[in-house]
Length: 365
Ligand SMILES: C[S@@+](CC[C@H](N)C(=O)[O-])C[C@H]1O[C@@H](n2cnc3c(N)ncnc32)[C@H](O)[C@@H]1O
Ligand code: SF4
Image (cartoon, helix red, strand yellow):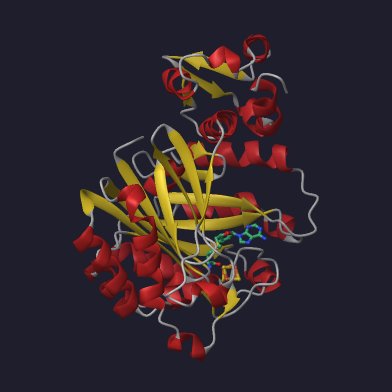
């Protein structure tokens, strides 16, 4: 928890804005190149240095937006700054989220040269009908071609898929999952379509899980599956309450310092962020109960669950002050919660009720 840090780099621009997407992003225009983007990212790193200069960087995750439209030279300069100025883990994971239409051999080669070793492709669907419904710039053929090209350079290639899209029943999301597992990928994140949706989530999620587990893709957190040993290092760190720092507009960070969890939020105001002389982070010290609540929610959303020892440590060895022990026993009796080898974790059914279970576990709720 104390010795390593992940760095998240948020690139907020996209060539095309998808109508369903509510992530923090803007339409890319040529004049963006006139912003001193390099120095804005470096300013963010320097603003946060006091929280991680003595830590080892275990992973760097470049997300967005569409970071695959970033000029490779800019990305290389930012990565080189991190490689040169901080302690880096020997096998540091450097991961980038890419849109399939941005994948070319030349770019893949450049990515490899600047230290990227994991690519996650926003495939979303293998159905041309669904892709056009979503207004995506790629089609099925391009999605598949980008996966094969990426896997030639990156053994660790993953994809995102979206389920619950209107009209998708016809194309059957299950067939898409089976199809995906035959491709050279190691990781699949599945997202529920969030847009005027009334999908029967729980029923379908357990079906999808069965399909993927038969193909040896294991669920390791709420919506991500991977072959053994290919969990995203960044996801695992965020969920395991390890330190992560975020640079770029709207990014957030969570660090453990002097026995406190500290959250740092970067501005969402793109004009402010784009001025490298302005410092933008707002700091919040998490109360003990909020830190425990976050620890429970994130940890229980993973297949490994939470360490009881870590829970005790976070509660200054007095977990009963924060946790409702009667409710723990009750949840165990109802087979929603299990305890094994010093860890608490949720059953499949429990996982689907995680919000109410965490609220139940907090004393006084
Ligand atoms: C922030 S996006 C970045 C990826 C990349 N720009 C792309 O679109 O391929 C990360 C992932 O969030 C998911 N996502 C975005 N909007 C969504 C929505 N409204 N409902 C469900 N999933 C969504 C998609 O699977 C997407 O790949
Ligand atoms: S390309 Fe990705 S980040 Fe950009 S609008 Fe579409 S889904 Fe959102």
